[in-house]
Image (cartoon, rainbow, N blue to C red; front, side, top):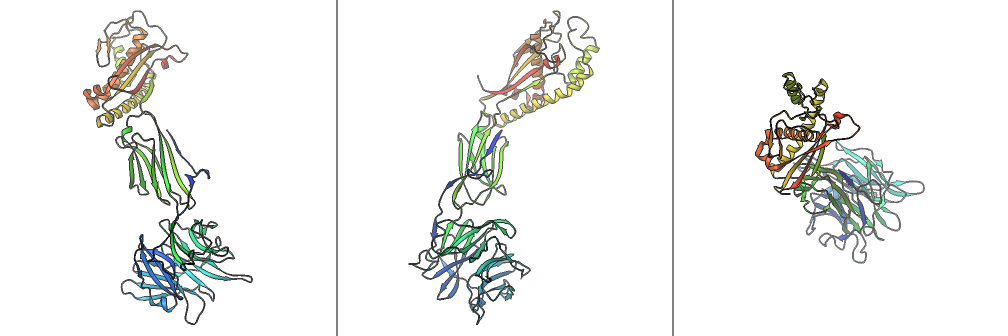
Amino acid sequence: MKISFFTLIIVLFSFAQIFCGEIEVIKLPNNVNSHFDEFPCFFKDEKLFFIRKEKNVFSTLYSKSPNFDETENFRITKKYFKLSGNFFSSTDAENSEFFIFSGKLPNRNDNDIFCFKRNKKNNEILQIYFPYNTDGFESHPQFISKGNKIVFVSEVTSETNRNTDIFISDFTNEKFEKPIDIKEVNTELNEITPFIDEQGNLYFSRFDTTNYNLYKAEKISDNIWSKPRRLPFPINTEYNELCPIVINNKIFFASDREKNISGFDIYSANLCLPVFLEISFYENPRLFSSFDKMLLLDSNENIIEGKYLGDNTVLSLDLLPNKIYLVKIYNECTKETYFKKQFKTLCLDTSYVKYVIRYNFPSNLTQEVNLPFFLSGYYKPITRYNLEQIKKLFDLNIIGTNDTTNYIEFPSPTYFDIGLKVEETLSNIVQQISYFTKMFQKGCIPQSKILKIEITGYADPRALSPKAKFFEESIFDDKMNFFLEKGTILSNDILSKLRAYFTAREIKNQLVKNFGYSLIDKFIDWEIKGGGIIKEEEDYLLLRKVNIKIYFENRGL
């Protein structure tokens, strides 16, 4: 079985091929955007919450995705307006709702952060003290998705510079912990409007040239991020881009790219370019190919899509980025799973991603095994039962007393030790044939197919006595096309064929116990061959053997 899960062309040991692409940016409809300034704040319950700035007064609104065809005012706590609130965020607890926003105390010019708790049962509003306001500028607070952290902006002053940086604070038991400076993203430039998505990636805006641009820093571990990179055009332009929020791999942000028409408006873009899965098959001749199926499942192994392979050599599927998938290739009739692989798709904003699975189906049409270790001059497989029977014949002087049967070797204890291995080999062969028989009975194998069992017997190169005879009752077996009369003079050619025949009988007798004669005779065609002697310099015990070949043919050939 050969399986290869192909990798990124540009990065070794990754999982995909990539192709150049471009993101499409869409301006939200006029129900959201106006000739005033609009800034997105957060997503909740499939609603986009945003603020509208009109003559330095902020109003809070929301619009339901995905169409954003209606906009309604959002009734936030009255404290928001009394404190000249602007950017805000919200999160839910079991019986409470928390609001956090930036605003100004009366008669103060500096911007601070305020947090309020609303009791869902009685609508009581309580303020939660944020102890890390300074005499400078604190703004743009955002609850992280689970509500146990916030990110915000705070002004940092040095002897040579005054700028805004991004900080993160744990919010536990309704208390804010000491903020941590996110050193990986903060510079001497201004970093503002931070947002952390469900994967823990940090987005923000930085004044890096003559305008603000959006950046992304990927999460490495708790409170640690990679070096940020600027998002590509057309998300960023030569104008200002602010307030990124990300939901379901889509980014919403504010931009003043249409300055001649309006101020800041809200735009959206698919942050991840399309992701594809391609499965190509290299199929050897197989029995059950009409039942081969590919399943695409989610991380809980719920079926997303299923396709029969049929005569296809390639299957293509559209995937979602940032999602865990399980690909399974199996046979619906036999329940055999050939391939199973779980992986998480990438989210790239500069390239398409294509995952490629190349699978080489193993052939199951031909199997072959050698069964050695026959008694010298004898033809039945040396199972422990057969050894006991031949030993009784010696004990009763039925054989071994004259020239007609002196050619048969007496079974020493060594053969009884070997007999267990012979039984295991025969059992494995019967088990494999039984599996095929069950599949034929179940309808997994077409009626046009027949199981061919070709058994060829061999003898060691020593000649038999010219007086050696077949001492057992005559054999007239038309099912196996084998006939031999009692008293026939034996040669190595006949002895080798007898070994093939009695091995076939041993196998068939076990099969008939489970399936009956009718089904076995319908499904299996036996071919008994005598291979004569083997002239090789090897232990004679190994040369006395049968070769069993199992394969399928079309019926009637």
